[in-house]
Amino acid sequence: MLMIKNFTSIFWTNTDASTNQLYTYFGIAAGCILFLVIFFTYYFSKKYRAKQPDELPEQKEINHKFELFILILAICITAFFLIMSINTMQQIQDIPENPKPDLVITGHQWWWEAKYPQSGVLTANEIHIPVGKRILLEVNSADVIHSWWVPALGRKIDMIPGLKNYIWLYADKPREYLGACSEFCGIEHARMRIRVVADTEEDFKKWTESQLEPVITQATPLFDKGKALFEQKTCTNCHGINGTPFSENIGPNLTHFGSRKRFLSDMKPVTRENLKEWLTNPQNVKPGVKMPNFIFNPDEIEALTEYIYNLK
Ligand SMILES: [Cu+2]
Image (cartoon, rainbow, N blue to C red; front, side, top):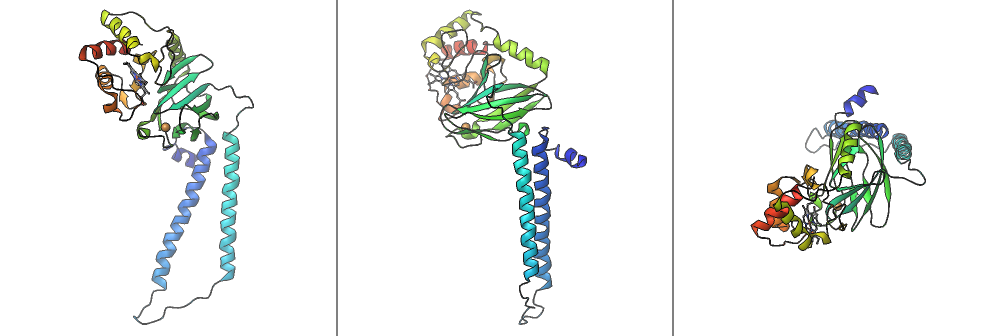
């Protein structure tokens, strides 16, 4: 078993061992059946082929005993996997009666909102979790059905408006884990990617603290101009910034936007250039996106970029 486990860990890094084990058994059984079907198709096509052009190949009567054997075998295999699957489901779905989630993710068209009820952190798109700890994740949706799936961290789960669903996440290595929305949710569904950053306990603490820090309110004059524009141009109707009166969440919370590596649900790295391109016309970058084109002039773009980029 150990060898098989080492082998599958090439593809699956999580230590949600029960899922991996089930997956391995399914793989082996399906592989054997595939091999037998191909082998016998080839073997019988050779063996019973007509040797002469008008020869009638040997005709066989149905073999009831053999049929019965195959039937029982199929029932046994199915029963084995049914029991294994139910077992695994029970092991991975041990959600407490009154769940207190470590992390709440809300799916939006087409981005992810992440709340940490224990610490009060509220962020978007770049999701951090501590390594080596089981994280109870609550998912729901603000609009249509989305589906959360980061294969290496656990199974897939639907995000349904008005319903709270729960799963456990577990990361065994400090690295980044990729996933994607896996329920068609509209025009930008394909670009609704997920990036989960698994930090060591220390890094996670640091990250949490940095996210709880108050947002900077002053920097350069350009920053101030951007800040004023942000409020005048109705950005605050959709984007929340902690510590200000603006808490809307039609779009991602921007409090510490500059501290994130990527934005637009993992589509682009956070750079000044990409931010400018985004603000110049969001519809060019992500067609159909729920943020209008404000038709800014280059000075306004400069100022807004300076402001948002410095929200660290
Ligand atoms: Cu989606």
